[in-house]
Amino acid sequence: MLMTSGPWVWIAGLLTLAIYSFLYKDNPFYKVAEYIFVGLSAGYWAVFLWWNYAYPNLFVPLGEGNYWNIIPIVLGFMMFTQLSKRTSWLVRFPLTFVLGVSLGLQVIAAVEGDMVPQLQGTFSPFAKGALFNTYNFWTSIGLIVLLVGVLSTLTYFFFSREHKGVLGVTSKIGVYFLMVAFGASFGYTIMARISLLFGRLHFLLSDWMHILR
Amino acid sequence: MRLQVPLAIILIMGLFTIVTSFIPARPIADLNQTFRNWYIGIITFFIFLGTINLVRVNGEKIKTKASDWQYSIILITALAVMLIAGFYKGRASTDEESVFMYLYFNVQFPLEATMYSLLAFFVTSASFRAFRARNKEALCLLLAAVVIMLGRVPVGTAIWKGFPEVTEWIMSYPNAAAKRGIRLGIDLGLISMALRMILGIERSYMQ
Picture 1 (cartoon, each protein chain N blue to C red):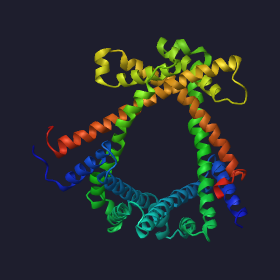
Picture 2: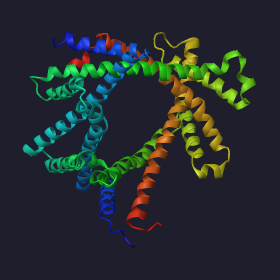
Picture 3: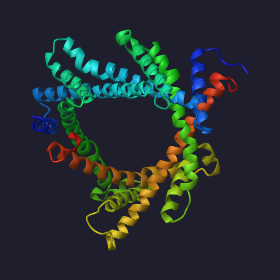
Picture 4: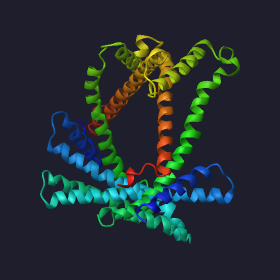
């Protein structure tokens, strides 16, 4: 077995084994890797967000003479008032600014980017009886299933009336659609995790130990 | 001052963002974009607040010699190393060949991928419990998951050539229908909660 001499590969390999050691039980090697991960992640995101968002959006325009940008910078630093009980109420100013803009954007995104296209996609194939003329048989059946699924799922989440009679039957159909969706998501999650596992095993056996070529 | 001004800020900024999103004319659209830039800039301060808090909590652990305090030294050291690597040469600190990116690709990324891959073992054991056809609903979940998994791997195609098409159909219609229903519900909830907060009816975030 010819192991690589690269120090970075050794670091990555040893840390990978340290994480997998948790499969035996919680141990100091795992804890060291876990704490390194938390520290590095916090540092990475601080640096990444600074250079990609705070610096170009706030400090570069300020350097170019846009002095209005002092306002968001002051609001940003007001976040740190949260660290003291005496001044923590000041955090409400940046928080409400951020929440106001964020909620406004989310309302627009939900209506324009989500609800309208979703409803359009569900109902438009049925416009002017275009269903079986425009699409092939299985697509047409699929579009009917889609419509029934959307309506029955929405009925399941309608809690203003007791689920009895027609409402009960429709919500029951909605449950089956939800189960299929949860099954699909679960299947995808399993596959994604296993492919990550294969990726790490491939790294250990190929890049580090050179067993696989 | 402590209550009325923040409520006024959220009301003005929320309504301004919603209304001006429909006005593409220049001065208004520019102001809307400026506020969006400010918003993006300000939210990055949250991560710095979180980082300071992380140092405070772990510093306290080291000071009081609480259980596992030795690991807190490792955490703070790792954090300091990443911050120094990311800032010591200014903007160039995050270039492709920088120490910062080496640390990301060779330490942080493998750790992250391994942490998530560790879940493969736990998800597998969880699936033994979840994949039991106790009733019709559970059978639906089991069948959908099995078909989706078989449709995405070569062994599925080897068993039956139709698995990829069936998988595609399930993903495009029954799965999309339920996801669409859930999404529409989330959107309606989001809009009502957003309006409650903008109008100052919901104030629990201020406590």
